[in-house]
Length: 603
Image (cartoon, rainbow, N blue to C red):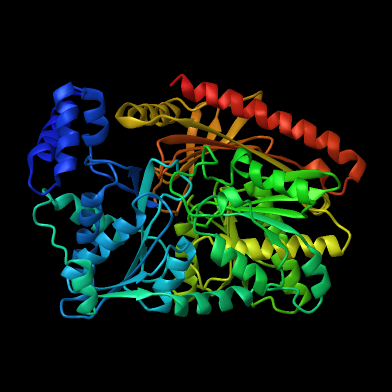
């Protein structure tokens, strides 16, 4: 830790402890840190400003320049308002959509953002009640807003909150807009100048407008239009199909159950302990459907009631977890498997119904399984890759929709390994409300055909080859953790491995510097360029086709390691051969993962 960092953090802390811009409780809490001489905590709270990452602005709640609090919400909203006025020109009537989730202080922060926009003469359209992130994306597009703001920290632990920012396209901010807002944010040196109009005064002036059922109805109708087997999946099958759904104390209960009903699924049970919105998330360690532990209560209810399917969504309802009853067992599917199954179901269904658009397109991220591309190609669809983060998928959708990219392609569906999926593009973010409905129809449809989801997955392996994936995450909080993550990434760049787990590294893709390197006896040699935007990601491809990728998280103090193994021997093999091939591939995933994590940790 440098003395400059410590000195700067102390100066900021003293400012927060004394400036009249802050309320009494905020000043007192910071002064207590100073009085105790708690240097490490002061540095963690004040060593930098809260930054925009792949999901916007996100941080631990509390006083501090790099914490989520009322003042940083006002500061960020001021920066957004200033940029919108500069971008569109003064005097133009502008509006911004605002929604919020169930987290602690979410409604307060949403209203604070609306008050700042009103003071700038920008109309804030704010949901009357908490609503999911995908509905905010839809709302931004539906009301033709200049931008959108969603107060959420997605699946983070309860001590976090966040601030996702959307452009007029309905997609999350991408360059240059994010960079311009960050620049204006960093130019705001103090908090005294941040204007805001009292909420009720702004409502009376027409500068804050609360949005309710009119938005719900339009959005729910759009979701209903995604149904693939409305005519050939009998209503009696749907009504008998039993679903356990958990919103994990988040925003999902009302929209998900309502949309399932519109799909014909009325036999839906909710774990009562997890039904109500609650920012403490008292029944789970992490409110994240990626974690099997988070779905344990829903799985228990499913076992007790012989339910066919378990669905779970995170607090802002953009990620989906799926667990399916197969015989007496409940099988948990990971994000890559969910994405492949949904992609197969959508493309197969559209093809069978004659609804596949001309020049269809599937989009996935660079750390998502390549089997999604194989499935797309099987149905005559193109498959393109973007950087990690659904904002990049939606940016690509927008580029084709506007003609910025040619020749024209029509987005059908796409996903990422982190449990995100999107069919159609009236929403421009991953949408677990829609994904729950599609998943319910998918499992019920295949069950009606006499197939389990594991059997469908095996069918894909026999068609395309066996894919197995694994993820390892290291959490390193605070300023020291951030420095350690940078050290690991820098070390892997300076001394990349030439072999991993007994296999030669064939290709290195460095997305930070936009280069493709071939590994030769003389060392890495430049053989190509990457045209995607710059991102701190390294990907190593081995000579057996395996891939390992490493990247710092854009929203959490974590570094993530992704491993994918493909075994082409499964293509055209018999079902009897698959178990042994799966076991071997999973062992290979673990071997590569352990070897690479050990290597990175020594940097």
